[in-house]
Image (cartoon, rainbow, N blue to C red; front, side):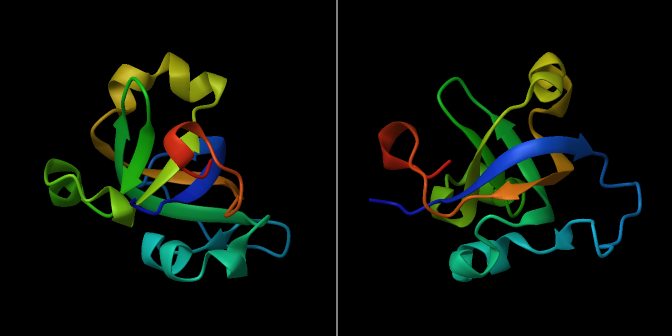
Length: 115
């Protein structure tokens, strides 16, 4: 079974806009950091970038488009769509995005995937 890390979405922003962590803001991390050391970020507000795929049964954030094309789901994050993302799903799907959310390394969603 493939392992997934999880991200609960709070807001979405364009990767072209700059962002920095502030004392009250998110910690900027890579997908690799979240996958390799999920316990370090569990319950924390994080900012991460990647290639977004919004499917019927799963929403995944990949390291890049090639990972999506080759189905490298073990190197992706599964997450919940918030209302704003759901409204813009067709525009966001299969694009590079930046996401800010509370990381949850423990909760399991459909098919045993964390969410």
